[in-house]
Image 1 (cartoon, one colour):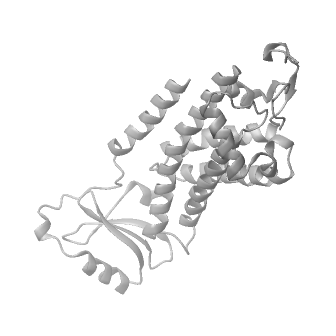
Image 2: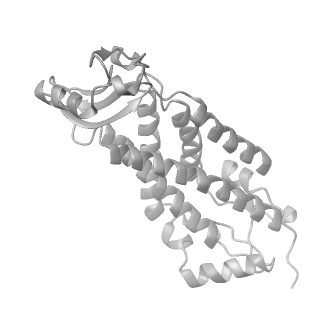
Image 3: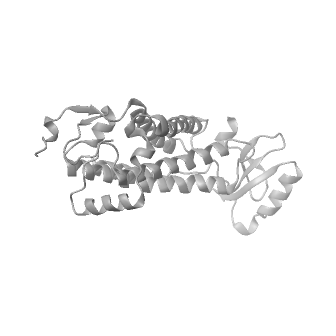
Length: 187
Length: 92
Protein backbone atom coordinates (compact mmCIF):
# COMPACT_ATOMS: atom_id res chain seq x y z
CA UNK A 1 0.00 0.00 0.00
CA UNK A 2 1.48 3.35 -0.96
CA UNK A 3 0.87 6.38 1.19
CA UNK A 4 0.10 9.70 -0.49
CA UNK A 5 2.82 12.38 -0.17
CA UNK A 6 2.25 14.99 2.53
CA UNK A 7 1.29 17.78 0.14
CA UNK A 8 -1.57 15.70 -1.25
CA UNK A 9 -3.06 14.91 2.13
CA UNK A 10 -5.87 16.61 3.93
CA UNK A 11 -4.69 19.15 6.52
CA UNK A 12 -5.89 18.31 10.01
CA UNK A 13 -5.86 20.44 13.17
CA UNK A 14 -3.27 19.01 15.57
CA UNK A 15 -2.29 21.80 17.96
CA UNK A 16 -5.18 23.69 19.50
CA UNK A 17 -5.14 27.45 20.14
CA UNK A 18 -4.16 27.15 23.80
CA UNK A 19 -1.08 25.05 23.03
CA UNK A 20 0.01 27.50 20.34
CA UNK A 21 -0.70 30.62 22.36
CA UNK A 22 1.11 29.25 25.43
CA UNK A 23 4.10 28.42 23.21
CA UNK A 24 4.17 31.99 21.89
CA UNK A 25 3.90 33.42 25.40
CA UNK A 26 6.86 31.24 26.47
CA UNK A 27 9.01 32.49 23.57
CA UNK A 28 8.06 36.16 23.97
CA UNK A 29 8.26 35.84 27.76
CA UNK A 30 11.77 34.35 27.81
CA UNK A 31 13.06 37.06 25.47
CA UNK A 32 11.30 39.86 27.37
CA UNK A 33 12.38 38.49 30.76
CA UNK A 34 15.99 38.37 29.63
CA UNK A 35 16.01 41.97 28.48
CA UNK A 36 14.16 43.29 31.53
CA UNK A 37 16.21 41.35 34.08
CA UNK A 38 18.00 44.43 35.42
CA UNK A 39 15.42 46.99 34.35
CA UNK A 40 14.09 49.35 36.98
CA UNK A 41 10.43 49.02 37.80
CA UNK A 42 8.44 45.82 37.75
CA UNK A 43 8.60 44.84 34.06
CA UNK A 44 10.46 41.63 34.76
CA UNK A 45 7.84 40.65 37.33
CA UNK A 46 4.93 41.26 34.97
CA UNK A 47 6.62 39.18 32.28
CA UNK A 48 7.03 36.45 34.90
CA UNK A 49 3.33 36.56 35.79
CA UNK A 50 2.39 36.25 32.10
CA UNK A 51 4.64 33.20 31.69
CA UNK A 52 3.40 31.77 34.99
CA UNK A 53 -0.22 32.07 33.80
CA UNK A 54 0.54 30.50 30.42
CA UNK A 55 2.48 27.73 32.15
CA UNK A 56 -0.32 26.97 34.63
CA UNK A 57 -2.88 26.82 31.81
CA UNK A 58 -0.59 24.66 29.67
CA UNK A 59 0.01 22.22 32.53
CA UNK A 60 -3.72 21.96 33.25
CA UNK A 61 -4.38 21.61 29.51
CA UNK A 62 -1.87 18.77 29.49
CA UNK A 63 -4.44 16.72 31.39
CA UNK A 64 -7.78 17.91 30.04
CA UNK A 65 -6.90 19.36 26.62
CA UNK A 66 -6.98 18.07 23.06
CA UNK A 67 -5.06 14.83 22.28
CA UNK A 68 -1.83 16.50 21.06
CA UNK A 69 -1.78 18.63 24.23
CA UNK A 70 -2.05 15.75 26.71
CA UNK A 71 1.09 14.62 28.50
CA UNK A 72 -0.19 11.11 29.16
CA UNK A 73 -0.74 10.63 25.43
CA UNK A 74 2.55 11.93 24.11
CA UNK A 75 5.08 11.26 26.89
CA UNK A 76 6.39 7.71 26.41
CA UNK A 77 8.40 5.47 28.71
CA UNK A 78 12.20 5.08 28.50
CA UNK A 79 12.01 1.99 26.30
CA UNK A 80 9.71 3.51 23.67
CA UNK A 81 11.79 6.69 23.74
CA UNK A 82 15.00 4.70 23.25
CA UNK A 83 13.46 2.78 20.37
CA UNK A 84 12.42 6.05 18.74
CA UNK A 85 15.94 7.48 19.25
CA UNK A 86 17.48 4.39 17.64
CA UNK A 87 15.10 4.67 14.65
CA UNK A 88 15.94 8.34 14.40
CA UNK A 89 19.69 7.57 14.28
CA UNK A 90 19.10 4.99 11.54
CA UNK A 91 17.19 7.66 9.63
CA UNK A 92 13.75 6.09 9.56
CA UNK A 93 11.89 7.33 12.60
CA UNK A 94 8.12 7.25 12.10
CA UNK A 95 6.33 10.54 11.56
CA UNK A 96 4.40 11.58 14.65
CA UNK A 97 1.47 13.89 14.12
CA UNK A 98 1.79 15.15 17.69
CA UNK A 99 5.05 15.39 19.61
CA UNK A 100 7.48 12.52 19.01
CA UNK A 101 8.85 10.70 22.10
CA UNK A 102 12.10 12.71 22.21
CA UNK A 103 10.24 15.97 21.62
CA UNK A 104 7.89 14.96 24.41
CA UNK A 105 10.70 14.68 26.96
CA UNK A 106 12.12 17.95 25.74
CA UNK A 107 8.74 19.57 26.42
CA UNK A 108 8.68 18.07 29.91
CA UNK A 109 12.20 19.41 30.54
CA UNK A 110 11.36 22.86 29.15
CA UNK A 111 8.14 23.18 31.15
CA UNK A 112 9.82 21.98 34.37
CA UNK A 113 12.69 24.41 33.90
CA UNK A 114 10.29 27.26 33.19
CA UNK A 115 8.45 26.18 36.33
CA UNK A 116 11.60 26.48 38.45
CA UNK A 117 12.32 29.89 36.93
CA UNK A 118 8.87 31.39 37.56
CA UNK A 119 8.66 29.76 40.98
CA UNK A 120 11.99 31.14 42.24
CA UNK A 121 11.22 34.47 40.55
CA UNK A 122 7.91 34.68 42.35
CA UNK A 123 9.57 33.71 45.65
CA UNK A 124 11.82 36.73 45.28
CA UNK A 125 8.78 39.01 45.35
CA UNK A 126 7.66 37.67 48.73
CA UNK A 127 8.87 38.90 52.12
CA UNK A 128 9.42 35.29 53.14
CA UNK A 129 11.89 34.37 50.38
CA UNK A 130 13.26 37.71 49.16
CA UNK A 131 17.01 38.17 49.05
CA UNK A 132 18.34 34.69 49.81
CA UNK A 133 21.35 33.81 47.70
CA UNK A 134 20.09 30.31 46.92
CA UNK A 135 16.83 31.68 45.49
CA UNK A 136 18.74 34.03 43.17
CA UNK A 137 21.16 31.25 42.25
CA UNK A 138 18.38 28.75 41.43
CA UNK A 139 16.69 31.37 39.25
CA UNK A 140 19.96 31.94 37.38
CA UNK A 141 20.98 28.29 37.05
CA UNK A 142 17.52 27.31 35.78
CA UNK A 143 17.80 30.11 33.23
CA UNK A 144 21.11 28.74 31.94
CA UNK A 145 19.59 25.26 31.80
CA UNK A 146 16.74 26.71 29.73
CA UNK A 147 19.22 28.39 27.39
CA UNK A 148 20.98 25.06 26.95
CA UNK A 149 17.69 23.26 26.22
CA UNK A 150 16.31 25.78 23.71
CA UNK A 151 18.90 25.16 20.94
CA UNK A 152 18.42 21.39 21.40
CA UNK A 153 14.66 21.89 21.13
CA UNK A 154 15.01 23.99 17.97
CA UNK A 155 17.55 21.51 16.58
CA UNK A 156 15.11 18.63 17.15
CA UNK A 157 12.30 20.54 15.45
CA UNK A 158 14.51 21.36 12.47
CA UNK A 159 15.71 17.77 12.20
CA UNK A 160 12.18 16.34 12.31
CA UNK A 161 11.02 18.96 9.79
CA UNK A 162 13.78 17.92 7.37
CA UNK A 163 13.32 14.19 7.93
CA UNK A 164 9.60 14.32 7.16
CA UNK A 165 9.69 17.28 4.78
CA UNK A 166 7.18 19.34 6.65
CA UNK A 167 7.45 22.72 8.37
CA UNK A 168 6.90 22.03 12.06
CA UNK A 169 7.53 25.63 13.05
CA UNK A 170 4.61 26.69 10.85
CA UNK A 171 2.52 23.80 12.22
CA UNK A 172 3.07 25.11 15.77
CA UNK A 173 1.87 28.53 14.57
CA UNK A 174 -1.26 27.60 12.61
CA UNK A 175 -1.86 24.23 14.26
CA UNK A 176 -2.44 22.17 11.10
CA UNK A 177 -0.45 19.26 9.70
CA UNK A 178 -0.97 16.82 6.82
CA UNK A 179 -3.14 13.93 8.02
CA UNK A 180 -1.60 10.67 9.23
CA UNK A 181 -1.16 7.84 6.73
CA UNK A 182 0.81 4.60 6.56
CA UNK A 183 3.14 4.24 9.54
CA UNK A 184 2.48 7.76 10.84
CA UNK A 185 1.57 7.94 14.51
CA UNK A 186 -1.59 9.96 15.22
CA UNK A 187 -1.61 12.26 18.27
CA UNK B 1 16.06 28.83 10.65
CA UNK B 2 18.42 26.82 12.83
CA UNK B 3 21.23 29.24 12.04
CA UNK B 4 19.06 32.19 13.03
CA UNK B 5 18.17 30.51 16.34
CA UNK B 6 21.77 29.69 17.10
CA UNK B 7 22.89 33.24 16.29
CA UNK B 8 20.07 34.63 18.40
CA UNK B 9 20.91 32.42 21.37
CA UNK B 10 24.60 33.29 21.14
CA UNK B 11 23.68 36.97 20.93
CA UNK B 12 21.62 36.60 24.11
CA UNK B 13 24.49 34.86 25.87
CA UNK B 14 26.93 37.51 24.71
CA UNK B 15 24.90 40.34 26.19
CA UNK B 16 25.09 38.75 29.64
CA UNK B 17 28.61 39.58 30.75
CA UNK B 18 28.66 42.90 28.89
CA UNK B 19 25.67 44.43 30.63
CA UNK B 20 26.54 45.89 34.00
CA UNK B 21 24.45 44.11 36.60
CA UNK B 22 25.33 46.57 39.32
CA UNK B 23 22.88 49.23 40.36
CA UNK B 24 25.62 51.45 41.75
CA UNK B 25 29.35 51.87 41.93
CA UNK B 26 31.53 53.13 44.74
CA UNK B 27 34.81 54.95 44.46
CA UNK B 28 36.16 52.98 47.37
CA UNK B 29 39.89 52.72 46.71
CA UNK B 30 42.12 49.93 47.93
CA UNK B 31 40.38 47.00 49.55
CA UNK B 32 42.73 47.12 52.54
CA UNK B 33 40.94 50.30 53.61
CA UNK B 34 37.52 48.66 53.54
CA UNK B 35 35.67 47.77 56.69
CA UNK B 36 34.48 44.17 56.82
CA UNK B 37 31.19 42.95 55.44
CA UNK B 38 30.46 41.41 58.81
CA UNK B 39 30.70 44.75 60.56
CA UNK B 40 28.23 46.24 58.06
CA UNK B 41 25.90 43.35 58.71
CA UNK B 42 26.20 43.87 62.45
CA UNK B 43 25.43 47.57 62.05
CA UNK B 44 22.36 46.92 59.86
CA UNK B 45 21.02 44.17 62.11
CA UNK B 46 21.45 46.58 65.02
CA UNK B 47 19.27 49.06 63.12
CA UNK B 48 16.54 46.46 62.78
CA UNK B 49 17.35 45.05 59.36
CA UNK B 50 16.94 41.41 58.44
CA UNK B 51 19.99 40.79 56.24
CA UNK B 52 19.47 37.96 53.75
CA UNK B 53 22.50 38.15 51.48
CA UNK B 54 25.57 40.34 50.99
CA UNK B 55 28.17 40.59 48.29
CA UNK B 56 30.60 42.99 46.66
CA UNK B 57 29.36 44.80 43.59
CA UNK B 58 30.93 47.72 41.77
CA UNK B 59 33.22 48.52 44.69
CA UNK B 60 30.24 48.65 47.05
CA UNK B 61 28.70 46.18 49.45
CA UNK B 62 25.39 45.05 48.05
CA UNK B 63 22.83 43.98 50.62
CA UNK B 64 19.58 42.09 50.11
CA UNK B 65 17.48 42.63 53.19
CA UNK B 66 14.18 43.41 54.79
CA UNK B 67 14.82 46.87 56.21
CA UNK B 68 13.66 48.30 59.54
CA UNK B 69 10.38 49.41 57.91
CA UNK B 70 9.70 45.89 56.63
CA UNK B 71 10.47 46.68 53.00
CA UNK B 72 12.43 44.41 50.69
CA UNK B 73 15.57 46.30 49.69
CA UNK B 74 18.57 45.72 47.48
CA UNK B 75 20.80 48.36 49.03
CA UNK B 76 24.33 49.52 48.26
CA UNK B 77 26.77 50.75 50.89
CA UNK B 78 30.15 52.39 50.62
CA UNK B 79 32.61 49.86 52.09
CA UNK B 80 34.68 52.51 53.89
CA UNK B 81 32.05 54.93 55.19
CA UNK B 82 29.10 52.48 55.30
CA UNK B 83 27.07 55.31 53.82
CA UNK B 84 24.08 54.19 51.76
CA UNK B 85 24.62 54.66 48.03
CA UNK B 86 21.44 55.58 46.18
CA UNK B 87 20.46 53.30 43.30
CA UNK B 88 18.04 53.75 40.44
CA UNK B 89 15.85 51.05 42.01
CA UNK B 90 15.47 52.99 45.24
CA UNK B 91 13.21 55.45 43.44
CA UNK B 92 10.63 52.73 42.79
